[in-house]
Image (cartoon, helix red, strand yellow):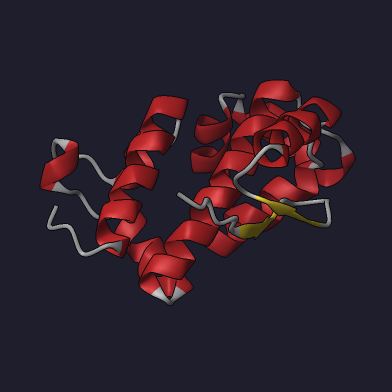
Length: 144
């Protein structure tokens, strides 16, 4: 079985493969280097997220988020979450073929998620995985 590599841009890097040997290692490397707060702010704007929502996703205080979004790098955990959220946003844009539709879907309570919106689950890596899996189901036409 041949594994095809999707190309996804990770903030602050050149294009990197999403799957295959270098994909997860590249993400780990970038998370360890730290992602600039500006990248987090740009992603928040792209997804229509408030500073408070972004701080919750990154598991940092709102004050820390405000301080770092100007010209500081985020820590390991917050950087990894930004990179995962970026990957999720790219997947959502691909599935919905429209960023606005994806952004609206993020806020919509879904029965399959126990009445939670996908956005409600993005503050944990397990939740991000669940939302990504749901996007995969939608992508392949599996009724959810």
